[in-house]
Image (tube, rainbow, N blue to C red; front, top):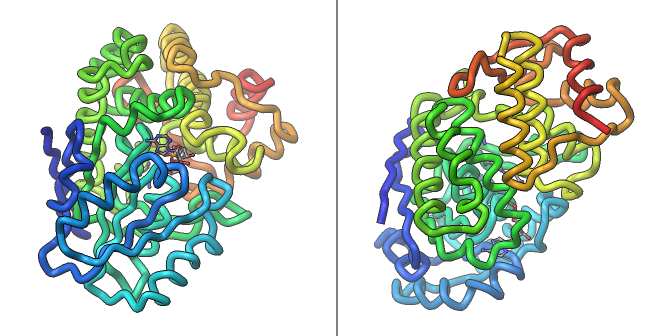
Length: 359
Ligand code: NAD
Ligand code: GLY
């Protein structure tokens, strides 16, 4: 088993990464927990619910299942309220521990519920998608979507543990693996050119879910994310670099309607657009843009975005980004592979990038 430590002002906790880790979940439940609220969805419940309930039952604690509808389109305040309906209906107290079993949608919603239920209860992230294992389960961002913007209602609230079972990836559709790989290559682009090159060399094996390669990619990603969030938990600066590609990506997700593209697919395409804008603005080498586009295509993500309603709509959607200050969009850009900076960009350059990278 690999352990990666996260240390933020809001909490310090381990990330445990191992094949078969679901069987050891009881270890993550504190001794003083009264009840376990197991938040998941019908897809994940059918695959792993029984195994997880059996593992948690060894704690001797009552387990209250909370089954939410599956999918990004259900990441809403209404769905969040269903968690409270069950937990209040079952009179769950402040020593309840919420276990979030599923992908980023479940993790973000269960985490938000933990942040506000009775003004805060403890929660454990048990991510079962590649994207959630390498990104969303770590760092304490929790949220639901609003019709006017993605993840706009939420809280920074850290879990007490992240429990990653790499075996859970065996049941994941190929498309979800591609989406997770987009977030993995992002770490190479912002922090480590050698890791980006490693992804290029191993992309076939990663897509084929070769256990050693996948375990390495998850461990390295968790290390990069832990390093960043331990220095800037609340995104007052450094943490914004984790949003490389996301300003473009969020516009795609909101413009097409949440769920049309997977979050990771939109990020993958956004990485290409961010690389292209970096070439326009920072002298990022054209050959490196080609490397980024080639790897994004190789992981199985789209490299061209949708036209939406044209450049004006793109701009409006991107202005809704949480990094926007006084109406100016902040982009995460790269001077070179392995380094990231945050910058505004002239509208005509952004428009050119949108024109060139959409169809
Ligand atoms: P998801 O949670 O929708 O999961 C994708 C699909 O896979 C769902 O249908 C799910 O039921 C299914 N699934 C989950 N585990 C499975 C398994 N082991 N086998 C088979 N099917 C399985 O999507 P996601 O990509 O995991 O997460 C995307 C969400 O994460 C977005 O809402 C995004 O905003 C959020 N996110 C949050 C952060 C953060 O820091 N909090 C970071 C990145 C993304
Ligand atoms: N996924 C971006 C962040 O956690 O900050």
